[in-house]
Image (cartoon, rainbow, N blue to C red; front, side, top):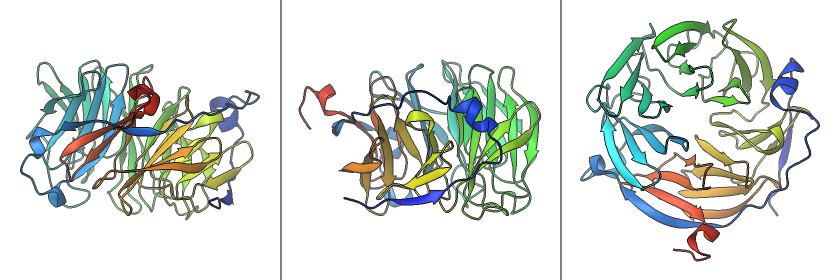
Length: 356
């Protein structure tokens, strides 16, 4: 049995627990299922490209609108897919983004879905772009930095988008708060303490959090609450040596992080590192109790049981580091450079009890 290492997590405010994690809820029982490859979706804009030269950043699934999106720097576009028909739709905004370039100056980077037919992409020139998939119209707003707009999260309930400007310099990084309809900047949060950059924001229970791999006060990283009204980071969860990059909601009010591959429990102020977990992006399926990690070093999709916090299955994925999960059907989508396609994995029961 893999050994798990416990790291202590401290909170600066008990309010983060009360607001986001609903104490007293009965612990969820998990029943993670084995997965198998369901289908491959070719990515036409990658045809003929050397897999080693493909550069993408973030991927995201919006099950409500049936869209999967990839921040594709190689194609200078947001690649979009229909999650119901398993088809490539378009390279949205192709040519309007910076495209390949040095880290911090390429684009698109972070991506998300902000409407039934609208996608957002952070560009390497410090702009945010909103693309209408039907009309092709592109709205652009400049955040005033010198480098990329990176990872982001969108709260449809308040029409608020939070994005990281993470390459401005060790003491000059900041977070930008947008209202999407109509597109405008609400404000910015300076982050001089964010020496290790700014990673994935997350919307959970109406609250927004963001992961920091390292700060001047917490070298092992932290998870902060973003107050979009006061434009402050008003609550801090220390992450010990987890160094969180990806950030997602787990079962029973837990945070799950990339980087060190941790599960963070705010009530007990304890974090648990999952053996063979980690990576950059992560995805979770709390309803079934499955956590997904793509590990570039082993070229595998590692699935962990949220209940035991142990990896129970490893699936080959070749080249890549992205992963997204569809909460509607339990599917896990992984862009794969080597096959120039998106690999779609599904629970074996959804495949009629057979693997493919």
